[in-house]
Image 1 (cartoon, rainbow, N blue to C red):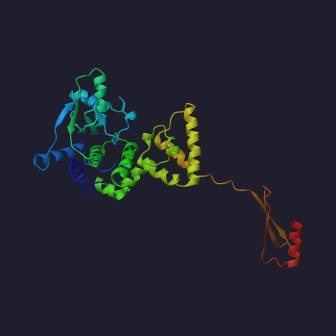
Image 2: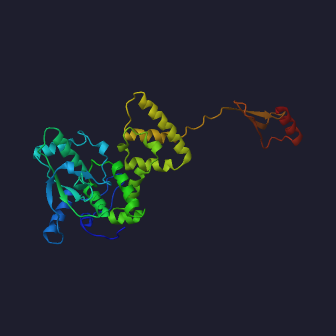
Image 3: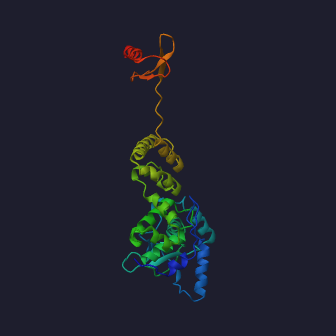
Length: 327
């Protein structure tokens, strides 16, 4: 793994603030701000740009570590881009790609911009063949490609924690030797935030299936479930609740939202308190009427408790005779 490598990836990741509140998206400057800084540095001669051009989307393929769940892309989820492209009559912000050398069916690999690629293809298939895919061609190593993809997409609200977490999980082992410290330093983010994000990808599959849409699993939900999943009794309780949720869903019940599902699972780990056994308490007095013994009898027949009360004035013989009578 290359350490401390600079280039286009580091250009985009410089000076990102790593101070973040719990449950918020990772801090990053906006895409336009990042691009503006990059252009300023290009203009100053510090960086040499590769070319930007319109290409056939069919000649492009997503990079193997891209952070989009392709099955989650649809007309509905990409509606904002579809409308924006139609309004502008073209794609305005280029995707970032690198050239392929060993794939006869594709010329480019998409590092950042899979959603834009999907949108252009959808438009071409729906009566707009004039649309092409705007890309900037860069020369990047795999680790640089990951960092570029991350900074390009980190502030995007349309990328779910689920997608981002699985991208980070794959990159952690491939580029950073499994070291959270090393990865956080390269991405310019806090180690604590990175750890919380990775928890999303590390939830047991047996709990993940409880969610109607796994994209509903957020950093906050994973934060609450992960400690419980590490404890066998709690995990067993959540498994049983998952089975109940799945049964309800299969019977036609309205799917629960992510927070509702998490609440059900967490609530299942809190065992209801055992009902208190009803007891009957009586006293055994001496011949003069002074309380000598206190006798507690559970109504469920689980034995009895005898207490010798102080200051009754009874001697040992009298007390033992009373106890033998009770027994």
